[in-house]
Every structure is written in C-alpha cells, then in structure tokens.
Length: 630
Image (cartoon, rainbow, N blue to C red; front, side, top):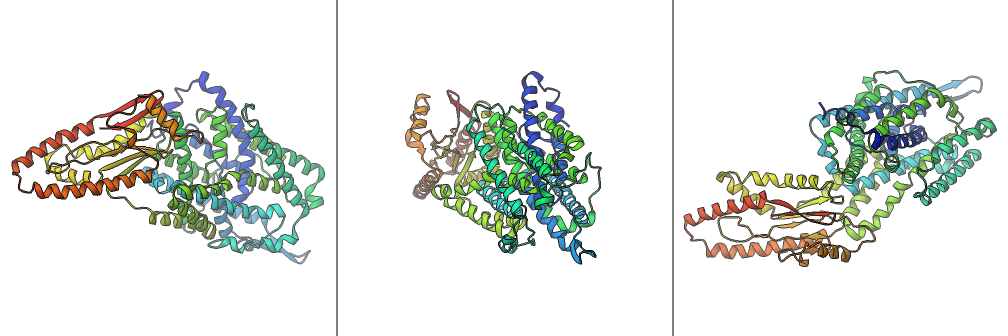
C-alpha cells in the first residue's frame, strides 16, 4: 500500500522545521511560473489558454499523491503540448468549422465550436495516454526508457522545439497560415508567402517582448548567486503586456490578437469522447512514452544527486493517473519541465509539498485572478515560448561534442532531429528508436556498467546494489554442480565487466580464475569509475587524488587506467583474443588428462568462483567511494 501511494510513507514524517520554508518559497516561485507557461503551452496544444491552467492544477495534485520523485515539477511541457497540437489540428481543422456571414458575404471560422471540439480531442488523447502509462506501470514496463538514449532524447527534443517555433510564427507575425498535419507538415507551412501580410502591431509586441524577456533572463543569470529567487520575468511580462494592451486597446486599434475570455472557477469532470480513441491511439502511445522518458530522466538525475531512489514503474503509474484523471477534467498531457524543476530545486524545494503549493497558487488564479488576463496579447505568450526554448536550441552544440567523442551517437542525434522534423514528433519518435536500435550491437565478451552521476556516500549503497544485481544471475548459477557448464559458458561470454560513468576514465582490475575443466587463466576486467569530472578538473588531478587516497596497489596500478571506454573495450578484445589463442595451445597439451583431474578442477573452480562473487567491498578515500569486484 505504501509503495503504491508514496505520500502515505513520507508525508507523516514530513519535517516542518527542515522543509516547510524551502517548500513554501519554492511552491510560490514555481506557481508563478505555471501561469505564463500554462497559458503559452495551451496555444501549442491549440486549445484556449485557460485549459493550460487546468493542466497546471489537477495533474499536479495527483502526482503529489502517487509520485516517487521529491524534486521534479510536473505540468505543461512544450514537447507534449506541440504533440497534442498536432492531433487537435488534424482532427479538428479550421476548415471543418467555416460559417457563412450574410452581412459581409464572407466565410469565417466558428472559433467557439472549433475550440470545443479541440478540447474534446485533447482530453481524449490525454486520457488514453494515461491509460497506456498505467498499463505499462502495472506490467513492470518501466525499463522501456532504456531504449531512449541521451543523444536520441536530446535530438528529439531539439526537433520538437523546431515544430514549436514554427507553430508560433502565426502569433508573432499576426498571420493565419494554413496548417497541415502528418509527414512533411513543416514543408507546407506557408509562412514566407504570408510575411507581406504581417500585422505590424503584433510584430512590434513580439519583438519587444522577446528582447525584454532575454534581457531579464540574462540579468537572472548574472545575479543568480545574489538573488534568493529568480526574477519572475514571465509573470512580470504578462502583467505589463496586459496593462498596456488594456490601456492602449491594442486589439481594437492595431488588430493585435488577445487571449479573450477566461472563465473563472474549476472545470467539472467530463468523460472523454470514446469514439475518438480509435483515431488517437497511436498518438496516445507516443505521448505516454515521451512524457515518461522525460520525467524519469529528470527524476533520476535529482535522485542520484540527493541520494534516494525513484521507482520507474511507480512513476509510470503516477504520470498515468495524472494524465487519465486530468483528461476527465479536460486537461492536456503533462510531463516534467526542466526549467520549473530547476527553480523548484534551487529555491529550496525538498519534497512534493512544493508542487502542491504551486497548485494552490494556480487555484487562486483560476478562481479570482484569471479574468484579469483576458487582454493579454497572444504574441507575448509566443515570445515566452521562444525564450523558454533557448535551452533546447543550444542542444545543437551537441553535434561538435559528439563528433569528437562518439560519431555513432552523433549520427543518432542528427538522424533523430531530421526524422522528427520531417515526420512530426509522433512518427519521428518511432523512426528514431528504430534507427538507434540499428546502431547498437553487443560486443562479444564485454559488459559495460555505467553510472551517470557522482558516486559518494549518499548513493554508494544504491550503486553497490545495482552492480550486485547485474552479477547475481551469474552467482546463482554457482549453487549446483549441474549448472557448471551453463555457468562456464556464461562467464566466457562475459569475461570483461566494464563499469564506467561520465568522465571517460576507466580502471582495470585483473583477476585469475578457472573457466573450464582445463586449467587456464582468464582476466576479468572490472573497470570501475566513481568520479564525475567537471570541465576544470583534468585527468592528472584525478590520478593525484587516487594516489593520495592510497587506491593504487600491486594489482591495481596506473597501467590499469584508460582514457576512454573505447580504449578499454579495445584492450579487452585484444586480451581476449590472446587468451583464446593460448587456450587452444593448452587444450592440445592437456587433452589426455584423467577425468578425476577434471572433477577436482571443477570443485576448485566452484570454490574460487563463489569467493569472487560473494566478496563485494568498497575502498574509500576522502569522500569518494570506489567499488571493486573480487
């Protein structure tokens, strides 16, 4: 029960003295961010802005109860919103809601009917994606995120960011291009042809908003250490823009499109339209995988940083409940936002109480303040989206970095970007995963164990458990004589265990063991790394720390260090080839040995192998803990 509803385990032990102040400040700060981001990302989802506020309220409360991460901030997210927008505009295009106006002898879009239908589509795909996530969580399918490598995720989010930017150009220029959906949709966006029809007032509002937002964000960066909390630039921006729009009457005098009516109060529950499920099932599954992948990636980063565990299957269930229940309240799909999560963590948030408090801020806005933003220009919301995407666009700098470190990863990154841009986020994700799988193959005789965070006292035990879990299947095979042949075959297949993390320096330990009934030696290389290097820390400094900590010995010398994973793998392959060649010679020399000798060798092997796998310790120096497998 406690594992299924995590709030029941940690809330009774909540410390007001240690956590209350930080969570309060963090909750208010993140709640202020939810307002502009929720309204802006609603435009990406092609639904009225108020539904962005609903999506920043209901799902957060659900995640507060069922989520296992203490630090991530769930809610509206640009990538998820643009995927929703692709579905809503495909199933409810403007052309389906044209009405004839007798007075002007022209046709125009019935905005109310169109928005109502789009909200139904968004709620249906969100509800179905939540069901997919819950189903995957119940069948313990959390490992699916393994297939979303870092280059794939970063290339995918960059491609999705391009979709986001293109979708917002109409609000920046004040034009109405005809949108297309499906593969090659971006090619059909006729923005360039409509540039001469640009609304100058809208363009000026957009440029001023973008410049102002960038300047204040740079000021936040410059004064980051001096400010207790970042300047809420998005909130200040929409307040100033709303006041100016109301005073100057930008909509009436200059034709600047504004948000329009924002109803007060909460949204009553409405069951999603089941007839739409068949049309959105593929989009719903893509949303469930993307949303989970982003949330679990951020959740694990902060879990490793603060020394606690995030249950991947519980996260699937929590996100699934957030989306499915949110769909009943006509929300659109949510995930975790990096910008809000960073603010929540940096302002002192230590638990999901901060998220619950941010939801209370949104509740106050929906009940009493929301109507004040009806004169807010949509161009300002588009500007907020552009500025918040600068982090994703900076990911283009991954290309030269990956070119130097791993050209296959660079190929995956570039291919994912191209496929996502050409085939839309949903189809692009499937195509990108398929392509990345083609680039992966298992190196015979080598297992690589990777830790993506600094190993220190708070997470050392988790690191040890994870490593022990990887080798326990081999240990269990040692229990009976009957499985000896299977064990020998398995150990010969995985003779080299490379454990590594960020920093690209590997440590190679050599151990002697008997693999078959023939007496010979085989090196088991346990390359363990527990150092996470910053840009200013050179390899020479790391070696000095290892020396001062007394890490090196006769068996573990400086010759055991590798500058990269690639070098270590090449060494293992070369060493393995040499050993196999020696084995052939030894096999020829010992072919006529007595069967009794074989039995004694078997017994000796089991004794020694059990000692290798049962002994699992740590060598410590200073605050660093380095694992060694014996």
